Image (tube, rainbow over all chains, first blue to last red):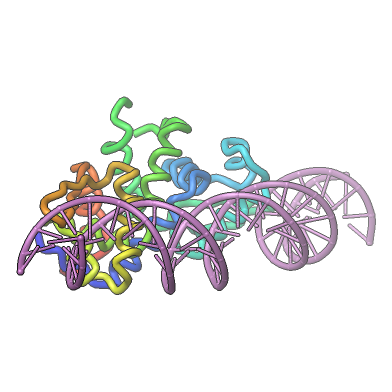
Length: 99
Length: 99
DNA sequence: CCGACATTTAAGTATTTAATTTAATATCAT
DNA sequence: ATGATATTAAATTAAATACTTAAATGTCGG
């Protein structure tokens, strides 16, 4: 149980949390827990514009947290890293008990 | 395993992650996993000024993540919320495997 | 090809965050 | 009380983020 997290790891984890620390991105990740969803799908659940949802998706995609699949003229987004699912699950258990 | 996290919860969790998402604050929390430490102690482990460490501690204290105890002319800081410890532990397991 | 729809990109502005420097407060030892 | 150390507070500057609007790209159906 040492505290021997390398500087590199600290930077990495901090960057990861930073990406997840925006309410809209957090909501998006939660919504993608079970389903693949498009910008339009997400936009109807999150109170902002399509352009803004798209921007947040780009941020998540650049950090490899989600991946996208194009089909016809829709783009389906999904969680790309299972560890994100575990992390969200842990946080829900710890901080959203009444559920 | 529903995705029924309330808006309120999303906001709360996002704010929490945001507080943890700065490398110096992340490092501070890790260092406080095992010990109570002063500004000076922390400063020697983190490459920045005492004033800057103090500022970050204030941010963490305002979010109830750490608590402080004054003794003589030192102030000892400790983790105030065990869930933070669990969260850090989970993140270490998930994202810092080689350890 | 044209129009409708889904998504992305770009530009511009506003807001937030971070770090540095400097000054202030408090406690101890002498 | 004086000086030394530890911590906090305030103010400034610099930098990163976020949102809006409008234009651009790409794909389908007719």
